[in-house]
Length: 516
Image (cartoon, rainbow, N blue to C red):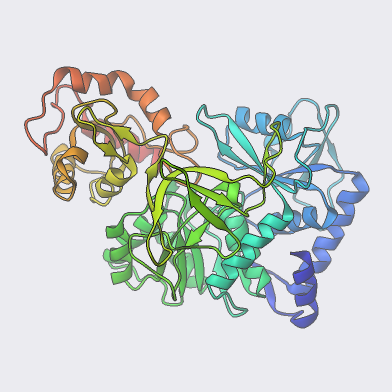
């Protein structure tokens, strides 16, 4: 990665590399900043650096400096709780924290050190005591994903594996020096880190990194879609990466009359299942959207639709540096991604990585996802249902913001619904509309309203936007059981009796309050 930046600093020294508002670093300036900070890290003898900051130029400089210094970097998601952050610091064995705010001021066992040159507004902390973690050899980055218990799990990646994915993405997306990539996802998200920073920089493009609030992202769940659309226009973005919820918001804004940027040429969407209907709506608006698929253990991306190889309903062809096969039960297995193992576990080696996703390939090599292995359920009538499929149909209805579907061993399926600002009749009509496009065994026969939106902060959503079904069912188990105990479905569009559901207007008010 750094070798390419050095070459570009000679070939196009004045070309903008990083842009944040009025601040711009050209490629020559980027190289100077990275080398200076890398030397500072080496002088301090840092072994593992935890990086905590909003989207900004300094985040990228620090990340690249860690690579240049040969030290391990641990991006810290800002939506993690204090307990989760402390777990990550212990689990990774981080001996330094670089942060752009004072969240770690009173952290026991850590002491402040001199701020690195050129990063005056930052805070550098060193661990006073503690031992290094047992990491697989070659670990350069540890990305943390929420486990089934909410305890983040550290995925260890080499610099070579990150570079391989970035090169493949640059190649299949036809990245070019004239591109202006707008980072909308947090830089601590591996998908944005590799696909939104490394891939553009490898081709000499410009990366725009406004703060999350500037692009309308307030916390884990809040979104001001007008600011998001304005950012795309103001930055003259040619590429960006979205999760399905951001794409849905962008499409709704476009359908409501807001002008979506005309400069976009490639919008990647992934992190969670995407409804075919949502993709169709985006395409009708002229949004050049391409669905992909990946996981942290594969250094973010496994497959991606592209301009030259696109098939509706699929997540695209597998990236050129990877190999793929299927287990006997249809689980997707990936090899060649360079996954080294988890923090504290045995090294992974060159084994096949089990993705936890069920899928299949068509005759032309396009990959299709059939559902999550652990969330797929079998009804009392022996029918297999992938809840993500049903949830995609539900959330395409204007009245439904989020949904989690359950039905393991049951005669019919139920859903926990996060509504938009609407009436109970609107939600019931939305479920009925979704059911019309589903076979009878997949339809939702009863539903209840969630107490609050699903977010990474409350543990009901992953950072990439996947519903954590195990966590949702734990929160609502009694009420889900009550739906089965008190109701008999009268037909494919039956909804829960009003006396058993929450007052919808109160629930909507709570939901709007969290998302404002």
